[in-house]
Image (cartoon, rainbow, N blue to C red; front, side, top):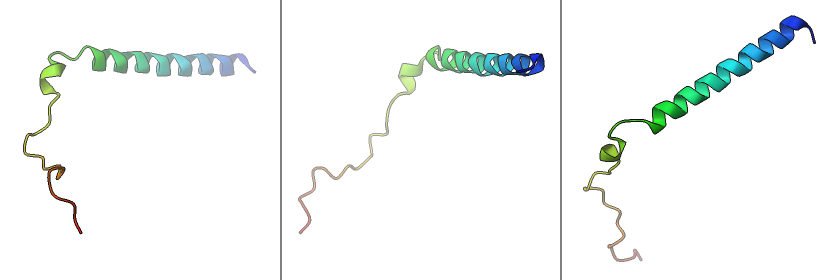
Length: 53
């Protein structure tokens, strides 16, 4: 492999690794994330309905 190929491979790995670390950081440090984790109460799951015949 040529020197330019090794340089490009190192640059590519660096970009992918940096982007992965940045995305994990953004997801794991979201302020007040626990306040936004809920579902609407009006969802009808139909688990209390009698079985259909």
